[in-house]
Length: 398
Ligand SMILES: [Mn+2]
Image 1 (spheres, rainbow, N blue to C red):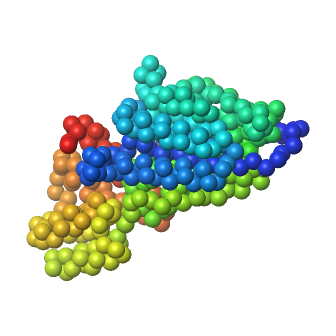
Image 2 (cartoon, rainbow, N blue to C red):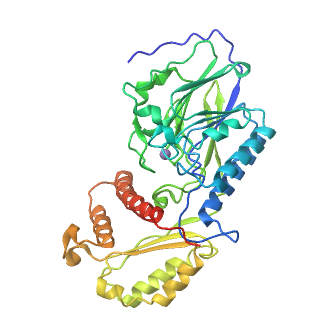
Image 3 (cartoon, rainbow, N blue to C red):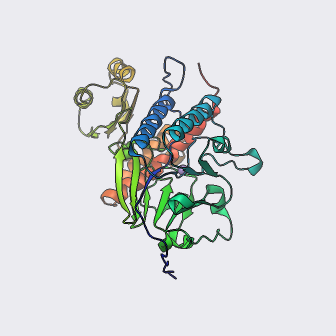
């Protein structure tokens, strides 16, 4: 590994950047609609973006970096495109900073002639987009060069060779993909080894794709997403969403948490082994009633382990239905004890069975703590991915 020592001939006056990623505008989940007929979670993401931009306007950074997955899909709705366009216009009207965007996997079409939904955003003054090939945007007045490698360019062979540009005091690299496997929020991103990209030459590396605010190195970080839009939101339920402020030259990072429009509540698992159905139902009620402020409008997850199927049939469904109607979404899962119920094995056909068997299998793993949880989250996210594809394939309701 060759580390080039950068001659800083230019003086390094302080420079403040803000780094956002994984906005996922157009993300849709569950079938609740707003009064205006929009998917509630899509509307929530818009609220989060507005808050993020309000905060940027107050913070007044010299430049804004957006490290990919601005849009959740290659073809966002006209409403979402219009919203993004208007919000960027609002931001750049209030803030003299350039806004630089490198495309992520969600908005990158498989065929380049499809075109990126990001393109239209480049029509907004001071918005710079890298959607296909690697690009360097330079800002003389800021003494800053921003090197972008959009998702499409991360699958090139050989990879684009990027080096810091000595003519500028500050060099930033921005890309969207998976660095290491410590935390996985989503699939479809390129696997990245920062050593392939002159890792030590950059004053800062702004990463997108992992939805959790994560340090990757002294000079590299994921800002995380602005709202709960990971494939498995429960695995990130107790984390704040937001963006980073980076103070150069020292590289000090400050995380700005956003007020999430939606609480994600992961209740403590219930172990139903040896309990009667009344005891299980009572414990479920206790957990549900322990949510401060009630279920109203929240995303709630409750896992009940070791409940034989014959007992599951005796649950009071009316009460469960009432909980479901209060929450924006109640993800209530009852898993039978593994050994008794393993009749058809993994090939028993129904998706529910397979998911339950896998969850039970994960519980038996000898992984400890973080690793086990990450592995389970990874497997679980595959199911969410399948579910999401199913949902996407259905005709739009309402
Ligand atoms: Mn991504």
